[in-house]
Image (tube, rainbow, N blue to C red; front, side):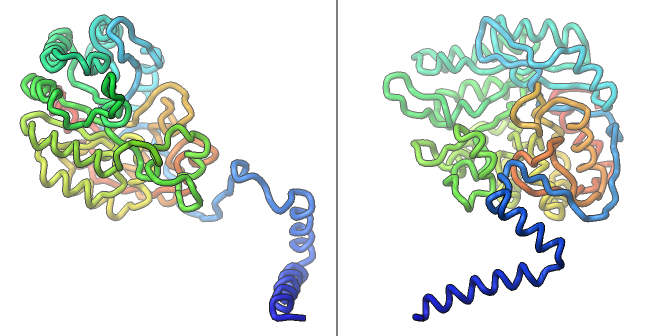
Length: 393
């Protein structure tokens, strides 16, 4: 017997000894699972239950009135129509139960679509809804686009839109007609649009990237392997897309060029890197962030997150990214969604789910509450958004 055969035999003997050394029920269960399941169960069926015995605080209603700065009651992107994902009456019922005074539908389209959204939301329910407008991306390659888009912002403001929403269309999907090249976030043709929003005191809610894992190979090292395996089209790896940090730096150049325009960088500025976000906030006084769909990131670094809330308490906004039932449970509009956010912000509970789902949708981890003091909660829930939107304090 050579050395390799001897080592192989030893390894098999050790494995057998380990199974036989277990108590009889455990050993039998091990053999049963190996024979019946081929060695285990599919990962998507694995739903482990925590054995930790920790306090569980139910927070059914926010301690103070809330502005949800980031929802998708509507979606547009066209000038002639608007689609309602959520029924306004259903929204109001949840809002009243959860102490949400105002919801902002950021994807409000433009033109006739915007006017329809305004008619059915803020005009029909004063004080309860706010609607943002969007750029006309289909015109971006036209020679007169800079002037046209600035004019559209002014028209939307006259109609009643309170802000401008930039989807990740810009930076990741918008391409030049003819060349098919991606259009850069800091392309000069958009300067009149940014300036118009600043002149009209319309905050710009901007989303230009995605989690860092979406730009990396979908391999065994990717912590969002399950999410990307389920949604491979969400990956930006291996094609002509810019790197995550390139997109973020392009946004910084825009904020630097337009200091009087107030930018709300959504999803904690599309970054899991709080030191980098802090550097951006320190460098750009016109920058704010919201926490929509990112408590799964903030809540697994609670000590650093708490310091972040303390330092930037005047520039962090409450948002959820709520919409109708989708493949992303952490964004599905429901009572349970808001209760998790409130628990994260108001308690110091440990190791709880960041989304109302049996299997964590972004990654297999749990979060911890940051237990914000009341003065900071008031700012995050209401005051910071109210100041940007021109609402009463």
